Length: 283
Ligand SMILES: C[S@@+](CC[C@H](N)C(=O)[O-])C[C@H]1O[C@@H](n2cnc3c(N)ncnc32)[C@H](O)[C@@H]1O
Ligand SMILES: O=S(=O)(c1ccc2c(c1)CN[C@@H](CF)C2)N1CCSCC1
Image 1 (cartoon, rainbow, N blue to C red):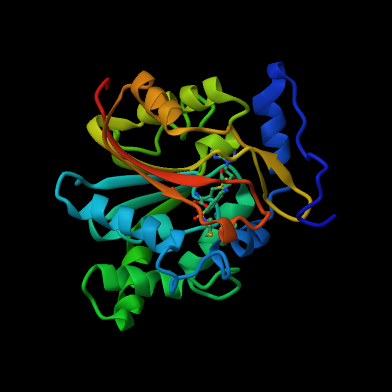
Image 2: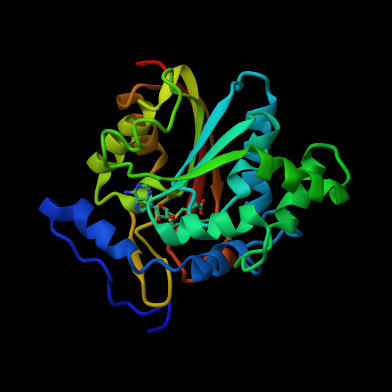
């Protein structure tokens, strides 16, 4: 079936939402997902109003304005993507990538081992972040080497578990910083589950640690592969802020990007993207 097939792949009832969502993700296709979201025409570095430079700029600013520091950064729900840690690896010398699916962890391992077979060329992303850092774009190979050096492990994660990572995954004090992009709202059956998952990952942080959260606004589904229609919790800015507060975070900054009409191409019904920087205050 094509990506626009309207048959829902994951129908669930209120009492088994998390289990049904996990079953849905068994059909997730990393190569298709990368193609739908991270290659042209959707991912376009030339357009001034493109989402990709906006996202990379949000992350670059967050890691360079001086309040985020430490040893260990964890990316929650990495999927098959790396853009979300390109700025982080300049600040943290231990980066942990995580995902629920082995197929995604394998995709990340292929990039890490640099022996070919990857479904994505991250060079344009590396070059763009080098530009943001005031370096020449040809420094992208050094940056790729720095990221490979910083990635300490690629681990399983489940944000619906009160203990999302294995007990020995983090130092006893917790992580210094978390990043999570397009994960919580696209793996939760409803808003309460989204908020609970925020609480679960918040408890991975040391006191006053930071969370950088990027997510979809107004999205009710996306295609995780041909005919793999995955339901998403449609969020608005107010709900994001309320859930963060309820989960023990203090918001530092919220930025919102509205998708231009021609970027709405059928692989999802996302209308906007938020970037939220916050500190945990209840740990
Ligand atoms: C929409 S993708 C986001 C991928 C990537 N972070 C990005 O920015 O594109 C959502 C990811 O969440 C993962 N996932 C699914 N269920 C999960 C769970 N219970 N806990 C954590 N991650 C989960 C999926 O395997 C998938 O890689
Ligand atoms: O970076 S995005 O905003 C983006 C990137 C990833 C995703 C979405 C959006 C929305 N659906 C998510 C499903 F969880 C995944 N982007 C959408 C416009 S073109 C480039 C990719």
